[in-house]
Length: 470
Image 1 (cartoon, rainbow, N blue to C red):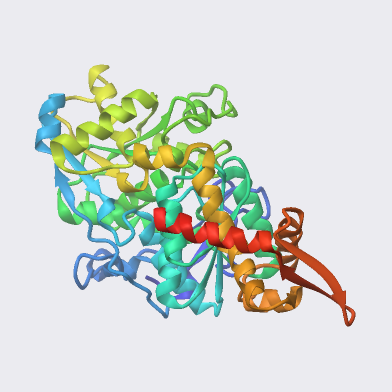
Image 2 (image 1 turned 90 degrees about the vertical axis):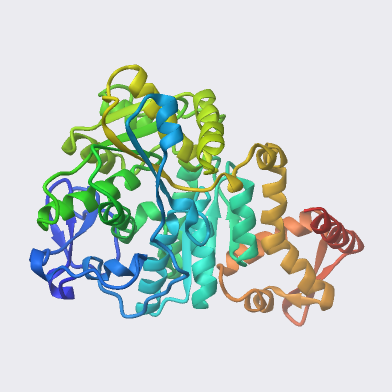
């Protein structure tokens, strides 16, 4: 990749250019989305080196001095012969991102973002997430010795929440769906100076995810069609940007048509692409929680990828998503989460409607594992009881355990919790615990101390029993 001086942030809407630091996501002039732009090297100067992994493409990524890795990238491009035959299709591939370290494509972004955070000497990352991004960042933060503060909505797959808890992330629930969580993460980063790792708010995520296109190019021919699920809209643009750069570099003469897919109950981008009802409200009942986004911040990018590639945008029903999820597993041995299976459901619909020729070459992106979002886990997550328990454990249980050892005051608790949230947030937790009768406060020496109650000790015992059942 060119030196820093050749790298810039550029508005996709008005073309205004900005330095790459400080990190930002929107144009100061028109409010449009910013993306990284660089003068690409000559074709003969492009040399991918090393094994087929994420950092193989370092030359075409924004420069970093520290490279964090758990072995991400190099995921299989699985030739899905049995699935193709069942649809009457000649050539179908599944780009299986479930093979990444935390079982989703977001590990690519986590590798680049944690590396960049270390370069900037940031020790705490904050991220709003529907699940996969939070799980990935929590794992990579643990690897790098960084703190990870994750903001999740009420609607989140419990399997992904379990990953975040295992990697010792600090988890905070905010908002019904991801839109509210993003606002919270934006405000927290500005207040605390934490590294902003929310996918919609950090343009490095697009750069990381474009490597999926590079891999497809190296693993096979450029397909005619690539199907991608859409939540906020950044993923489909990432992959389109990768293919477009390969063409600009002269490494390929063609680029695929991009197909963006959303569930019927949450189709803001598809509606906007078709010029109708772009702000239509989401249904919170869709099984594809990873792409449950009410106001997609990167909608403009998604529509640009679809239009520039002469692609398509469509919706499918939850019933069709479930059928596709089972079909992929049964015929190809790939267990895809609903937000991934939606691409296969869409392909079936497009073939039935004769909008894609049956002799076409097609790639469906499988973004994450069904192990994170099975029906069993969804049942456990009913009304977010399990998720709620996990969120309580992350902070409130820690406070109770500290107070169970000794009585102390708010500032000391903040320090013992690692200074990874605001003091105001600590006091909010203390107020809520007091209201539930789990702790009591008292004044001593000009400070307000807190001690655990018998009710609080019983709550701790209950937590321990529940952990044995999980």
